[in-house]
Length: 526
Image (cartoon, rainbow, N blue to C red; front, side, top):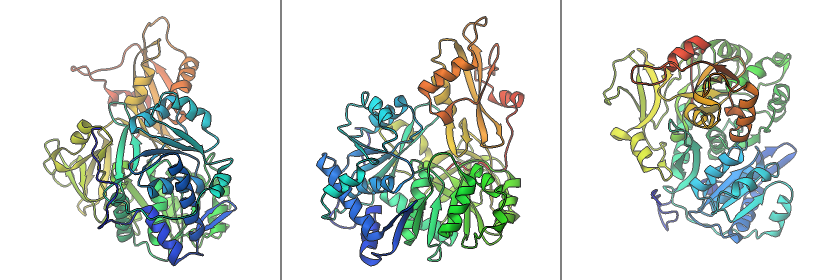
């Protein structure tokens, strides 16, 4: 193994892990509600016992400290319990996007060396197909049908394990320009200090008693969303997975008296368009956060008008930084509309040129970071890790400018990445897949403006044989077998050849100009 994590266990000096927090609340706030998932209500004591039982189930299948365990589930209490149970054993959790096809799931399993998979009973066929390509997987356990019976049969005896806070907690897969996903290793310390930095910067307090995140739990925003609730001892309300119903979501916010919530812009746009939104009792809402995708000034102004009692917060960052690095909050959401704000407490940032020199204020440069919330590295990818941390700072790939007051504005992304409905789509990965089609000679993927998702992928294709270009239907069939639905091109353009500069690099700026890609005011990349 080329990755050398910190020791998983220690006898002294350990920090506070997710599992430790839940165990603590089971003693100090045993009867307070910890989670609400539809009709299911769990106290801290009940949650602690269920996690203990699930950890016993995993242990019976040979899972121990340092092992990697994949979790592929919908937004649900069992998914959160799965993550916490993995961490309780000193193992490392690998959340897997349930939208992936078997080939993509297999990559995450093999690259991480996962020994077990906890999967919602909606997805076992995909996991079984992936398991055929992942020889290290010894057990696949469902967290749907039969889950309660598994817990009931397991031991409730809790044995505290001292897990070093510098040890890996999660491997979160995120892609890069090579097209191969990279596993960002986030430690227990990363996540704990990220929560505290967020609290210090945002003013989160004991008054924020009910929190909810619209992000999926396989996404870093979903993980840290409920982690922040844990640190402040707040109740977590689970937002359902699947098709987003804005009217039902408004009803959930109203019924549960949610005080702090995160949604991507596409979700907020649907929520503020609910016909009777002005008549609904959302007086409990104190903080309305958004990120993970571009947003227009029109949407932001509508949010400010719709929720006058709430603070509108812009969250910007990336998976490798746990993820939030910059926040725009309060009155600045109007005064500096379009900005991503300023670096969060505990995050040190610079705006630099390619030689790592600080650029002049107002000039464009790459924002780089360092601090205790930045990842440990990429799992088993030492070269990529070294490149990401060249010069001693983590390179974000985001190009920004800083105004005279120190507020940051995203200008562009150095890496070709499309953010569609809060999901990162990495061009190289999709291009490499499409290039395998027998009728495609070369392909470039670009993001074009989309009224619903902010951006959508468009494939510009030069056919292998000009007289026999691929049809849109043929490409769709091919993509269904090899790519998750959100990565598939929404449209296809056939051209004779892709435009290139003298060095042979594809001119994506020319493609964006020709095919309608449009800029937006902010590009959070959580």
